[in-house]
Length: 206
Image (tube, rainbow, N blue to C red; front, side, top):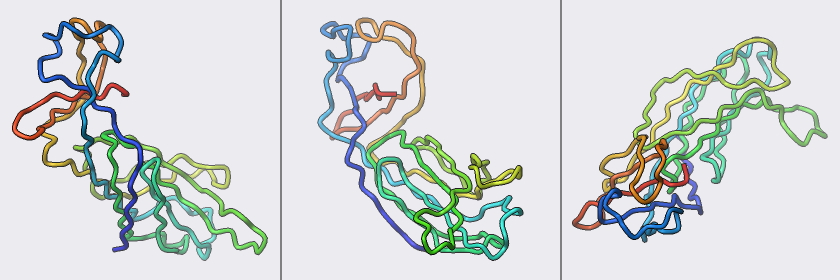
């Protein structure tokens, strides 16, 4: 396997209180009244691009490859493969502190022209994942680009996000507060262990 890591500079903004959200009495109506946690969470995201299906309109001897990235970080590129057998086992490893990162996978056909500056993009996929996301041998449709025919293109991927040990529970939940966020809204919550006590972190940005 080929491995590649990238470290993202931006961090997820965690808001929290040592008390229950419903018991807080000093918060303003806006988010500025919430305290910011002095730490960030670090996650590992592993993406393996295995196969592309639906390239029948592409000459079998043309060279194709895929790129993978966690949005905001560096890109990883697979080895070259012929369009007649677009198969890889290319593992890309990324590091991020975004709890809901967006991954991008794109399929390209190499442009053989000597004066060509860019390869032809055949299809792409953009997907938001979370710390419990784990898919193996997963076939998913890609969005086709202008160089492709009417065939349906698919990626075969392994995608896994590893959560840190201090992240005990996370997920989407509809909630509202007594003094802050007074209307029901779907938010992403993370229950995090900080030292010897448990605190509740709320992903306000989602």
